[in-house]
Image (cartoon, rainbow, N blue to C red; front, side, top):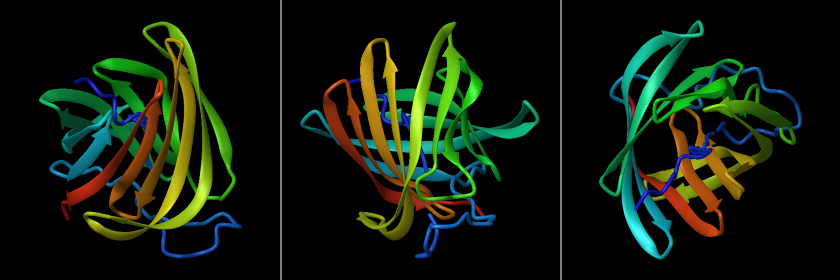
Amino acid sequence: MRTPIFVSAVCVSALLLPSLALTQEKKTTTNYLPLKVGNTWNYEVKAGGMEIAASQKVTKIEKKDGKDVATIETTIAGQSINEQMSSTEKGIYRHSYQGVDVDPPILIMQLPVKKGDTWTSKFKIMGQELSASMKTEGEEKVTVPAGKYDAVVISMEMELMGQKITSKSWFAPNVGIVKQQFNLAGTEGTMELKEVKIEK
């Protein structure tokens, strides 16, 4: 089964702060997607009537477009998916997916966090022009198998090859994505964090 879980996701995401109002911009250095070699996230995924284990691991850091870009390997249903991500004070970006560059990189989460912020990322993949609409929905407390978190919710909507893709991703401070809900061309699913290992 080939399920593009991280469309936030990939997805993709995601995508966070202690319980504070989001009515004003937050000046913060909180890392919403900690990218260090060895960082690992294990998830429980439910989609299409199936329950699947998925894992993500940062395998490499390299310079790309002047940024420290991490290669993340996702293993799900016996398949491996590679993507490149970066996390900066301006936001979280996706640079490539399965070896294909995203030009320009997709802004998945805009920083600083401000409730109600919306933005559109226009980009090309293999010459195809695409766009994704994002929104900072606000802050929520969320409980997943890995524990309880204060998180910021980022929603996304886009079309890919005529198919509509939507997602909501919950980002916890210094952890990353702890939950994601997605709809891939009518197939709904949920991903929740089970275990996490963040290198110091």
